[in-house]
Amino acid sequence: DAKTTQPPSMDCAEGRAANLPCNHSTISGNEYVYWYRQIHSQGPQYIIHGLKNNETNEMASLIITEDRKSSTLILPHATLRDTAVYYCIVRVVDSWGKLQFGAGTQVVVTP
Amino acid sequence: EAGVTQFPSHSVIEKGQTVTLRCDPISGHDNLYWYRRVMGKEIKFLLHFVKESKQDESGMPNNRFLAERTGGTYSTLKVQPAELEDSGVYFCASSHPRRALGDTQYFGPGTRLTVL
Image (cartoon, rainbow over all chains, first blue to last red; front, side, top):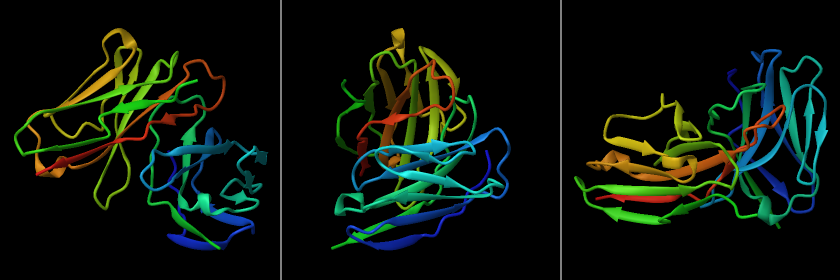
C-alpha cells in the first residue's frame, strides 16, 4: 500500500470547516483513499473512502485531486466532538486486509 | 445493531503473568482483526481472521501471543508470559465479507493492558 503524508496537527474554530490534507503521491490505480479518526480513548472510527471521485456522507466530504496524488477531508461544520486524530490510509481495492495507520493529524477544535 | 465489543476494558497484570483479551465482532462479520498501539507509537496490525482461519498473522510480535477464533465468532488474544513492552491498547475490528468495493472496518473500544 502506498505511503501517506499528513501534517502532524491543526486547529479549527468551532462551526467552521476543517480541511485536512493528505499526500499520497505513490498511489496506484487500484488503491482507495480511506479516512479514519480516533477520538481520545476510543477505537478508530471510519469516516469515508473514495477511489477517484469526490465523495460525501453524513460525516464529511472527500476531495481527491485529478491525478489522485493528494486528497482533502472536509468536516463542513466542526464541533468540539470532532477533536481527534485523523488518519489518511491508502488501501488496495477489494482488499480485506490490514489497515496501515500512520501518525495522523491531531485536530483540535476550539470554541 | 451492536458494535464490536471487547473485554476487559482495562487489565493490569504483572510481568510473567498471562492475560486473555476477548473480542466479539459485529454479528455476521466474517473478517476479524487485531491491532495494538503501544505507548507513543502508531496503531499496528497484529492479525486477520476470516471466519476461524488466520488469513494474515504477519503483525504478531512473537510466539508469546496466541490468537484464536473457534467457531468463527468471537476471538481471544492471549499473551503468555506478558512482558513490560506488551503494555498498550489492543483494538479489535470486524468487517463484512461480501462488500463489493472497499472494506469498512468497525473498531471496538479497545482493551488497555498494563504490564507492571
